Length: 196
Image 1 (spheres, one colour):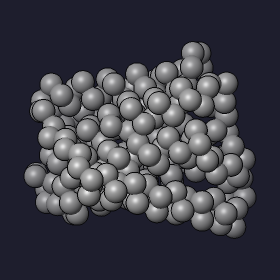
Image 2 (cartoon, rainbow, N blue to C red):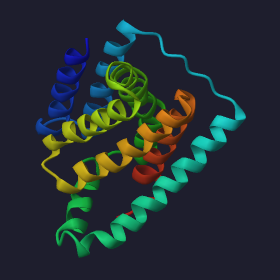
Image 3 (tube, rainbow, N blue to C red):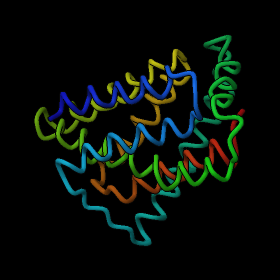
Image 4 (cartoon, rainbow, N blue to C red):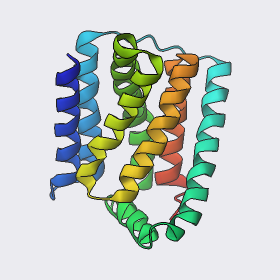
């Protein structure tokens, strides 16, 4: 079950980044739907939304946005091509309506990724090898499937974001809060207030 999930995620993210035709955002949406359906075949996640976890999710999304903004500002001191790599990430879906991207990220990829990566995969790794090791392994796999982008900055961004959401889930075990965080952060950083 876990091996199948990892292989499926690797294939889905390879498809997203390696296929040169079609719309990038449609491909990522399809990839997330695929892994979400896989996880639903094994479990029915418990997702609850209430004022407290919505507010905490929104606050954590804003905090992660600030972390990424600071990272973008400082990154050229570590990687000279950092800003051009970030712009290339944005260029992947540059011909797509921002409203469509916002809705896709907020309603499909944000919830779908958290259902798969945190509620399904991280939960199972934590049950098998312990909470912190399970969190760390899931974070590494989440970053690892982004190698198909061939972008060091995107792999690094996935590691930071995956570690952030994984830590939130480890701390609270509140899938609704992490979904709000991921959905708002990704929708805003790609469709409302891009950092590049």
